[in-house]
Image 1 (cartoon, rainbow, N blue to C red):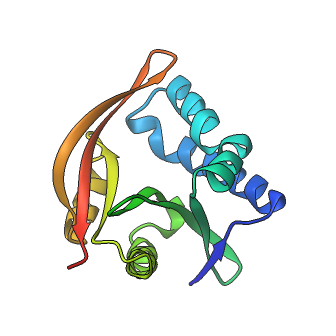
Image 2 (cartoon, one colour; image 1 turned 180 degrees about the vertical axis):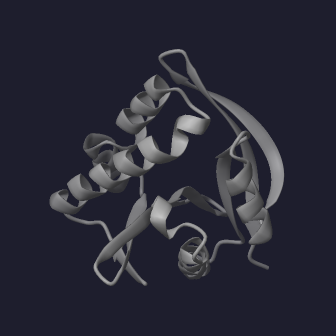
Image 3 (cartoon, rainbow, N blue to C red; image 1 turned 60 degrees about the horizontal axis):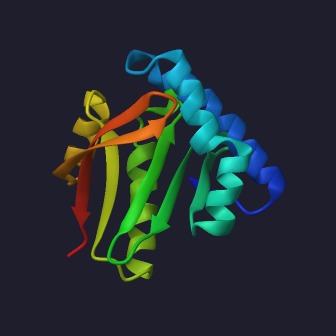
Length: 164
């Protein structure tokens, strides 16, 4: 699997399209279409991704294998941990070990940053993803409800993977 770090405006535009496709396929079992549209626009649109990359120290990578775009992830270094903001795999590639391969790359990156752990937030109703993270060694350490505007909230668990 190849990990292509997003750098150019054209790559950001491509990532926004991929993100929208995956989010609209994946989230309807938990979120309303209105909330999905709002969150994609707020967090995964071309404008939002560009701001995260250029101003907020985020790194986004597309996962590619045999010229197939499999998914993507987004990470951001914090003071003492690496924040795993996004890890999404396209439907046809889920359950094939692609997420695990991406996590291995993310772990390597956290070690390069000399971080002690990786943290993420996951929707409390996203049971299959929670189980996958637990299988990979993440532990739930807290929960959080975040008002994201427009009458929507993110009701999440905070999970952590210790590197030591």
